[in-house]
Image (cartoon, rainbow, N blue to C red; front, side):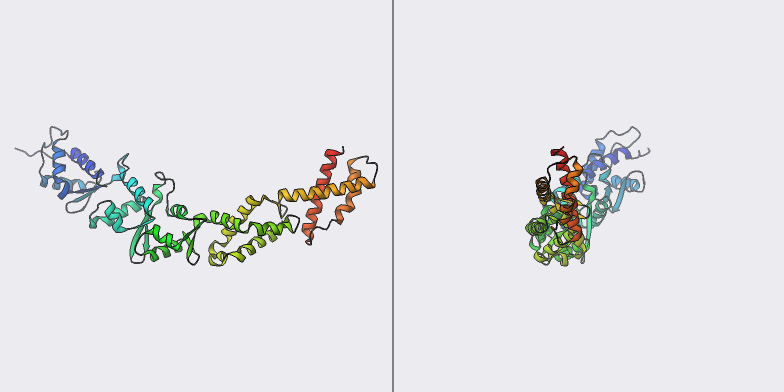
Length: 366
């Protein structure tokens, strides 16, 4: 009497179902009886064995692991692995990782092992699988490996990635040393902080840290602090500055109140850009012909000068045959305007007054 072979299709399905609930792992010592029972309850073909012993399970799985098409890998005696990422709709692993990293930014290997109830010998293999698929990111710091959330979770979680998590924890673009230690929540905190600094996630500001992905927020914070100083500089120059002067004024204002430009040299340019962008929005600035102006206040000053000149010209002459009469008779007044010690700025103001004067004449006099 011949012995019927194991129905490998049924056995593979049984193993996949068990592995799906165990993050891909099959431990024969723990699940052997369950595998045997599930197999014998399965829809076995007539030409295949209806029952199977534990030794038969071991033998069949060993043979199946040698077949590259089954997707079952033998890690060591009694331990097999079925890729759980190939199972459509299986969200246990990304859900578990999302929950884990919503509580802390960085975790130890032991935390990862404990969270997934893994055998110590299986941690490295499982971590490698997660890293390869981008679910987690390995941080090599000091003697140990640590882990943080990986880019592969983007579709599962919007605020994904280590940089995004640091942004969430930051206030005004910065995070204190104590708060950073709290959210890292691993023993070798100094190693991890050095890694974050080295990989340009943070910039050490001597006791607190600038979060690289939150420099725009930090620029907004700085702009708010120096806004009055910048506005005063504009006010002393008819609300217009040369672009180069504006950039220098902003840089000086920051350096007078903060040490960040000297402490974060690698982020200096970006900090300055973000601060200027925020000031542009807060003060209503506009760039025009290498000049920066506070639009509303500058336009008001220009209109006042234009109307003053117009009133003066109308007081000197009785008749105006055309708009050009108004322009020609006011040309001397435009050229005599001296509203800035900088020649380029003064010429820009003269031109702006003349253009405004023309608009008023065309709209109100003809």
